[in-house]
Length: 67
Image 1 (tube, rainbow, N blue to C red):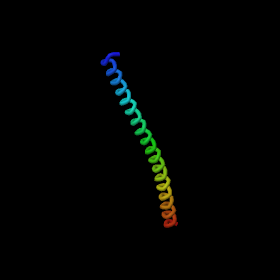
Image 2: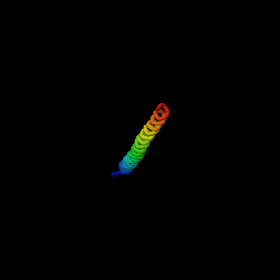
Image 3: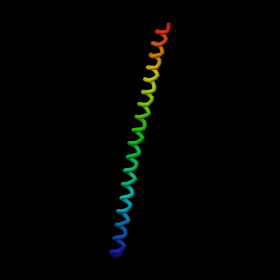
Image 4: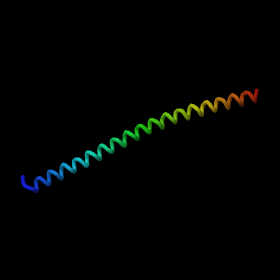
C-alpha cells in the first residue's frame, strides 16, 4: 500500500468511529428520555389518583352539608 491508501484507510476508520460514537450517544439519550417518560407517566397516574381522592372528599363534604 502506498501512503495515499493508508491515509484513506485511516480516514475511513476515523469516520466510522465518529459515526459509532454518535450512534452510542444517541442511544444513551434515547434511554434517558425513555426513563423520563416512564417517571412522568407514573407521576401523572399519581396526580390523577390524588385528584380523584380530592374530588371524592369534596363530594362527601358537599353531601354532608346538603343532608
